[in-house]
Image 1 (cartoon, rainbow, N blue to C red):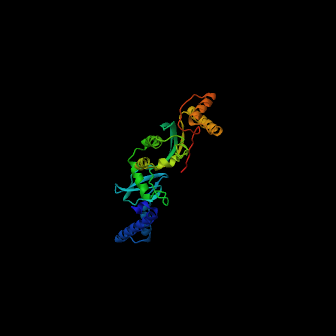
Image 2: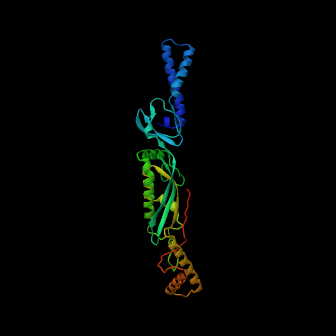
Amino acid sequence: MILISNKSFNYPFAVVTWGILFLILTFLLRMVDLTNPLWGLLALAGTGFLVWGTMIKIEPRQTVPLLYFGTQTGVSLSEGYYFLLFAWSLDSHEKIDLEYQDIIIPPFQVECLDKVLDFSFNAKIQFGKSNARRSPDHPHATPEEDADAKRRFVINNKENIPGDFTALLKSVCNMLYGNMSYSGRPAENGNPAILGVKGRNITQEIKLNDFFYHECFEWGIDPKNLLPFVQPHDMAQQNKDRNRVEITGMLKRLYPNLSDQELSRLVNLQLKDVNSKEYIIVGGGQPFANVRIDD
């Protein structure tokens, strides 16, 4: 099938086919004593017209499965001009639009260890393309992998994929970040620092997640980029958390010999002075975290 699907072979193959048809027709004309040069020109033009008539055009950002005498070949033609040369045809019913689609995923909640977080995404995916994991030296999918992705995409309902993709991201975010704190914990008292959700490379972590990767692989789609936005759901509580962190740091500098209990009591008194109720908090951080990673 490479003689048809690869343009470097398709065009010379068309010329060879033209020559063979011309020789066959010339032989038949000689058998009936039609040897005039005019008949030769007519034979040349006629066979050329037959070959030229098999040319088809695949529109940009489309791919169409190739058939051989009406049977599937497992090969799809991408955009461009091809000579099908009588034995081959296109399966127009399974034509695939290889278009990019933006999917806006509105905020959804993930309950992490110390806060309820709002995740939202502006994602861009490409249909009928493989997101097969490649080595750093070969970052792009091979033609065979893309052809396989097109076949997998054909058997899925394109209209359902955006909704399924949204559900997939919600599931993966709950799985990855539900057991983390928002801001993490700095290294102190001999304990190592613990990273939280804030400041993480969320795009990379999601795209490398096995569950996310395999679902996209089975759908035959390639998520080109994810632009996540993450912030605490309760911004009023987040402002209180920030005040507590700032006041605690200030009192530690002013009174370094205070015990933890005395320090906590002074912090609570200071918070009451700024019209803040006494509350228990684990961790703290900035009012929001805006994480954007372009692939």
